[in-house]
Image 1 (cartoon, rainbow, N blue to C red):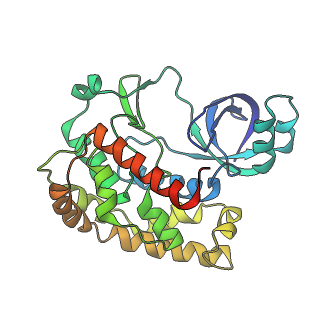
Image 2: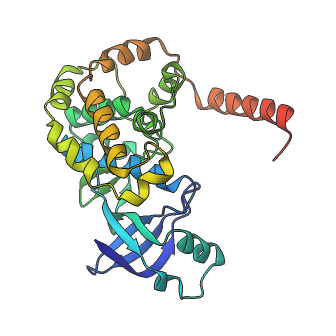
Length: 280
């Protein structure tokens, strides 16, 4: 396992506050810390989704485990960072930091193979990954190649871990804003590709999860039992990729929201929340 040796800067990104650090192998990584937000759950989801994406030969950035030692907290930088590092001592998630990468935009769309676009979209649909849209693509271009980032909002995997049920018809509104959504789309090659992922490969990526990440999730009393439950649930999901057919049918009738309509709906929801609970 790699060990963090030097902190460079924080990336102000939502509630997760990832950090750029250098590790014991001499390379830089984006560290996603277990002490931030829902960090442990987010990191388990990120690990599983990214590793499954690698098995599907998608252009994901493969994560590593990154130990945050107590000594990394010695420097006198931002108190918020010190507190976050203190809460994250132990195993965290690291993603290779790709220098000089550029955020994906429509200007680069012509450089991406159409079949690859379809596979990226279908994988996000399968995962119920609602965190990829034109304003926040979570994709980069590095050395002329597309890379997909940030799978921590993959609600299918979150649901498999927490048993929380998510309303697909509500979530599909977000997926219709995906940069690579188009209709019609041919899902069968991707469904077959998903089924061909070996159960043993799923078992391997689950077995690699740190035991210390699993106890707070309260899936089972023992880490070994929790891993067996996660393994079984993911294999069941993987073997039922035909769920994509139903979701694609639903997507066709989901109304596409304009940015103005989306902002108006968000404002309405916020006002309703404040009326019920008061301003935060």
